[in-house]
Length: 205
Image (cartoon, rainbow, N blue to C red; front, side, top):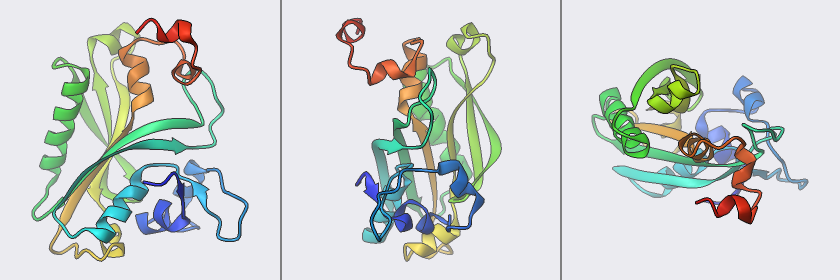
């Protein structure tokens, strides 16, 4: 999907209108034109585009670059990459979501990874969950659990905004930052190394 988005695709169709408090947490870069396009804060805008154009069932994976007004430091960058998954079909349940997410992260991080799900709030899913994981690598960092992703059942308002009847169709979505996963997997000290293009650093891999 496009990295320059409209407020409708990035926020409003995702059940996050202009006066919604969640907008403060995703403050972003607006372009100085009359229709206020912006650099997308998440790849969820692609979910809206697909649901508008394709009737269910829908199964997509959405990788892409996103932008937020973060101060660059060892663990944050104003530009990073996300992967999201969306599944819309009949009779989709939270069990389908949890099983899919467990499979994804065990494939990415190894079979010894343990996951836990905590209630959370996202405007575009309901119910919503944060995902933490535990592994030997996390424990080596001196922690038992580390937050890794967000997920939830697609909010009925989001389905309605795309012309999909939530009484017939249900769905789940999940998303996570792949830069942070790479930092953990390869035990890097600074997330900025992923974009600095230092050949000495790249030759290690």
